[in-house]
Image 1 (spheres, rainbow, N blue to C red):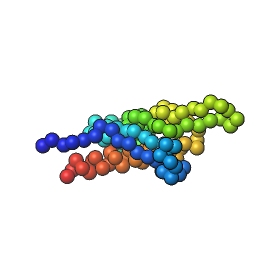
Image 2 (image 1 turned 90 degrees about the vertical axis):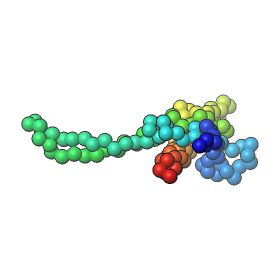
Image 3 (image 1 turned 120 degrees about the vertical axis):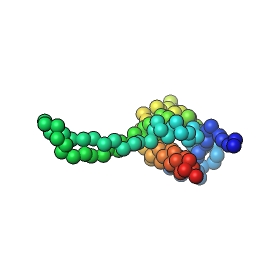
Length: 133
């Protein structure tokens, strides 16, 4: 069986009323389509950690799940178009073009970051569900 896929997808964020702007002024994001490799690389897996006393007896176990939201951005985000900021009274615009730029951006872009991470998590979750079917 041959499946037809796209290697990249485009998304127009809801962030800050972006979708209501004219298309020429909107922020758009290009990102990698979900793959098994990306899912295995990014999605957190539970890790069991044992606690032992000096004699080697177990005092119990705990399970930790560390989610690295930045990993979703670094591994899935290809480019951002139309996003930037300017210092008050300044003339130069700093453009946000990729994950590194977004992670260094002013805090007002945190909602954009969160929206993209949630999108990427959902993409990988959907891929996991599709694999089962």
